[in-house]
Length: 180
Image (tube, rainbow, N blue to C red; front, side, top):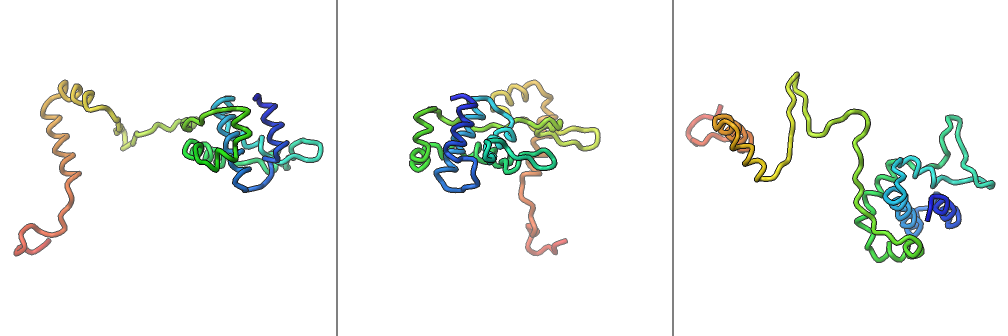
């Protein structure tokens, strides 16, 4: 099934209506996943535009800003792409998407969003001119790194970590001493 076939299917099955019936929503979710993962249409707004209502001639209606009227939001598409792998083997979902599954049999992979182009870097905190980076590594890789470091640096790091991880005592350990 190609993109034109998907567009025809959407209009034929009336999936571009503002319906929240479970069978229509399930078919939409199946098509979102197919368009994103298998047809490589990675712009979620463009996927949402495909599900906008059309006029009598079969064309999209535009507002004064040039946006398609009734197009689905990219956040809606992303939400369904995240949920799709979890519900794809649900009996009701399978029943509602049986016709689609016969035409395009797919197993929906997990959605992994991309970093935005705003230049965000994950796990980095800026404190003045010092950057703190959090890295997850395996135990073996950490031990190899620790062997190459100065033992005093490792002990200082472990001591700081122990102090931060230890619970703060609100009461004094000595019950007879006045709390300050």
